[in-house]
Image (cartoon, rainbow over all chains, first blue to last red; front, side):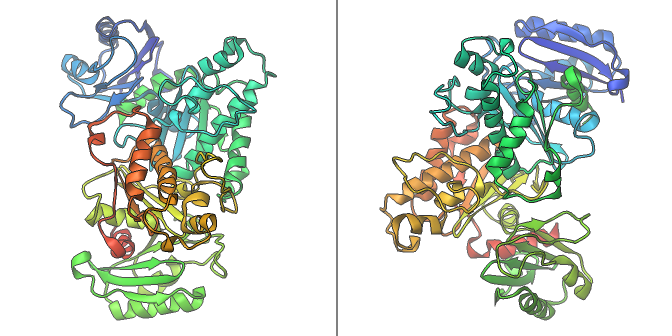
Length: 286
Length: 286
């Protein structure tokens, strides 16, 4: 089934159509500006990709994913100027006459990794991205988790030792939640330089790995994913994944026993920079 | 469909058969001793309840719930003497010739509450019991969560202020994880008297409510349950539920927005002392 996928990010939108990685073609990239101009450019890009049987959108959030909500599938109260309450599905469904399905960018990435990437064949797994923020996509029993809203596990409380890490965190809601401590801007605020400029031996990386390991331990205790894919600019820094795996095991302290622990639970993504738009393709095929 | 349900607990087993709460009859209660004698007594009780089309077991854990595991659905490495590696499903399936289904006691209680109790009509909710230990059952997209093992969210890390609460916790694995701080034995160790003897004004109850509220906040951030049912001897002490609801909101700090927050998320169970065996009945009907 040929479908269209839209990866809607805070700085850029990626649009493509196909059945999967083998016939995706060159994705179209569009700068994210105001919602009217951006969604107009997305629709124009989709016209050139016609025909397709469905549209999937993997979007930044927070999102309303409730199909019974009178205001439709949309972005809700986002700090991104102008985008609050932007309806994403209905305008495209009207224009193209095909079903439009929406999920979070991270649930999309998880679904794409499950279909074609590092979680193939698994029914229970997680996708974490640590970059400008921390996002978590979750698949349980083969389906993405939504619940009342959708996973926001990037904001889980973690334990911070103020002697080792006196930085109080930058989350405007929670201060030193995981995102407040481990995302790129938190690293930059702590060390006074952009995270990208720090070399691999900088002591902040094991600290960040420890915090991500606490998230992984909490996920193991709540939904017990068989694999945890760690992506994002911070998550893919050398050493961070291994530090997170080790920290997860320290925090779990041998309590959970399974042959699965003979191998790494925390693994790198399999789809690289295409995970977002392939996630959107997977959402469309749902 | 008339089915049999077995609530297998650490101190007693409850066995009943029926289609639901209306025709359950008087459940049979059996003391939990060694596994051979106990499961023999369970089988004898089931003979008297014959006929039934399936058997459901809601058991203490940890459990192997993997239908493809060569050693079968069973209790794995439990601290309870003699019970490690006890196969629960296969012997009863052979004797009665009906399907035998197994899940955790807390997933069972959650499923029962979803079918007949405080979570009717919901597809995403949680059941927490705080008593001798802390257990969490989770339903996501209408189905119980298993993953690699099953939820063990009673062992989530929480934040403890050593000034307010100098007690270091009693969990042999994690020290001051949630269970190590909030279960009945932890309360008794902290104040030097059994938890049941403490009056409702004792200052330990708001402290326990705070820790349970941290668990509720973490669950909201991971699977976003629409309702969290709080049971168990500690969980149902006056004031604890309200303290947990309030603490959850403080830890979430307004980050998650939904009209659902206009009402309490944390609610008492609807099935009382029958939630365990009704959970087992629900597991059998799956």
